[in-house]
Length: 342
Image (cartoon, rainbow, N blue to C red; front, side, top):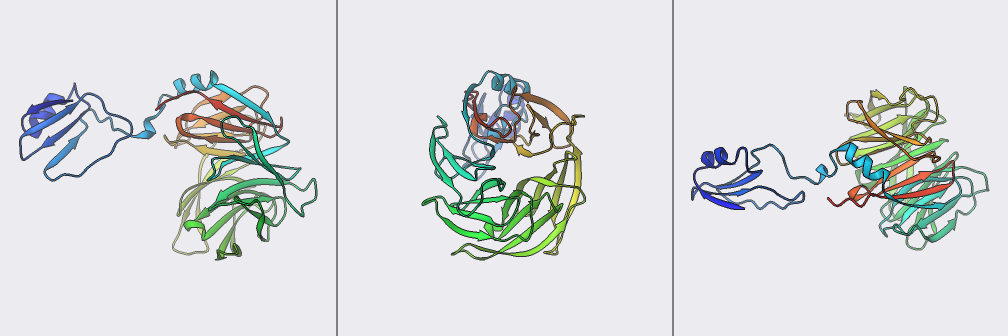
């Protein structure tokens, strides 16, 4: 950091090509000039002080690995940990820090140490016959929510691993599940009926949801659901490999559906099983094939990442691009650690 005397304009002129940031103290005609700054920062508001970024490069954690080619090269050389799990579906991180997945046909909820992938616990879901699919698990407010080909959605307390609720959706073929408004609304994607089911929470203890309404989608088999905020979310069409957005309207019983772009890559294999959005708003799509395809927000195909003999179903991107991959068809959970420090 360098200090200089001068007006804000004089400081800006000096810093334009050499310095990344400057503080200007208008009352004293002095400035602080910075050649570099951290990606993570804290701002304090002071009267008659201005903060400038002359080169239009702004500090932000989301700049971590903005160079996609560099990121992919590091992921290809990443430390890889692999464990065998029968037909895993979905990767979530709970409040205990565990990596959690559901086994599709054995109906086991399994929790892993996030570093070693050693099994912490393995719970058999009660009253569910073997072979009845459980295809999705998500986590909200201390509980796991598990859905599948038929009702109910089973809710399990993450502390004592007991079933605390069974939720009827009046639907089937559940493939995605999100919460809005701090859990007041649950949205379920039904592949079997090509619709979104909206449920309203009527009780917190015990957890109770009731059917509110359903909305048919213009596309078949809504599958992955990615929440952005309480008024906007994304949904994939599994078979058509398309991405749609849904935006809230003034009415509680209808959302605006909007087609965004095609994510098929000309590949007839697999389907748009899951989508994950990173800090730079890059869309990472998993197709139950060996290759993850990456797009920007307007549908431009940016690049891809291939893990041979994998058939990736879900992707969980953590800080510094540590990744967990759920490999359902080859019965594996993979941890990729590229050792990136942002």
